[in-house]
Image 1 (tube, rainbow, N blue to C red):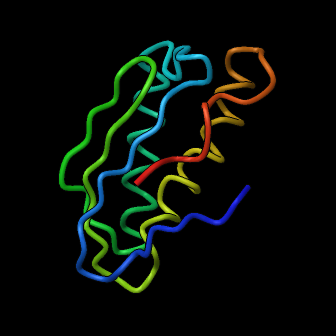
Image 2 (cartoon, rainbow, N blue to C red):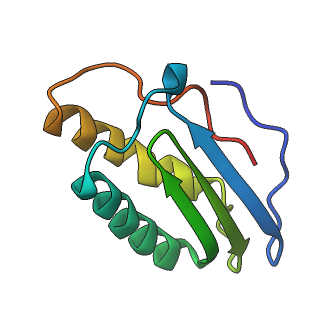
Length: 105
């Protein structure tokens, strides 16, 4: 994957978003939504990132976050969704990519 151009700076706010490959659903049931929320909370605390607002929809998501610590906010969606996609594929007996591309910010 190509390195992104966005510079992540402590104290700055970022709108992070992505959608499912071919606009397919990335959340199929309540368990998928809850799994994502649990991972968001865990990694946001670990990386000192404040989640200001979020919107999880069946085929895409939007987050508004503030990078409070030195760890770049780009790590939040990477860590949340690397584990989520593996769990999603296992839970729904599927393989392959879930997202259209790397997240955008």
